Image (cartoon, rainbow, N blue to C red):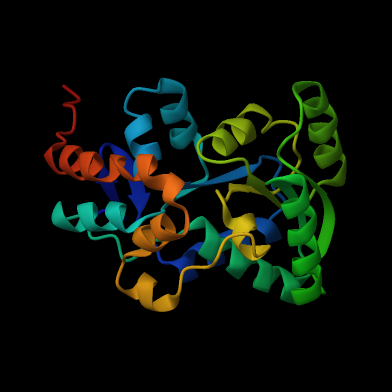
Length: 247
């Protein structure tokens, strides 16, 4: 039996959140010279990479991709792929912070607006006092500041680089500078820092269990409605998708 499920040609490993954290813990413990890029792939990224060859190559080169969204999981099950569960950037980040606190891992936080970036570091330092925060920078930097940020991260060599520049911008940024960042793991986490900082309300567990987190986010942030329009289009295209023949 295959250990991955394909959704619109993208291979998703059949792993749980627990197993994901185990894999990343192992990566940190190893002496790797190459950055391990983790990408949490949602329907938007899955759709975009059908036409965007660079984005598709970034996914193909990633150390690990996970199913970030119930839509990915449901389509996989309807097509016989049977992904066990979704593994979101937010849930993964919380687990890594918890493990990092126990194992004294080092982090660098890049992204969000200036106030949120400052606040999230304060919150994390208070809640996870034993992990190491080597540095931080907000995501509203100018192009002429970029090289300095990359140089700083490269000199600090964090175990985990958290990038909140929005998807797929974070994934492109990590890939662009992958040879200079000197981090063991880099992950794009979307708007997760906004939630941890308290700028955006966390989705209640009851909504998550019903798989309607997208609806809760839409209620909290009505401006997301345009993004949500892609979900029905994704479902139809993904269910009708035919793998290209290798012949």
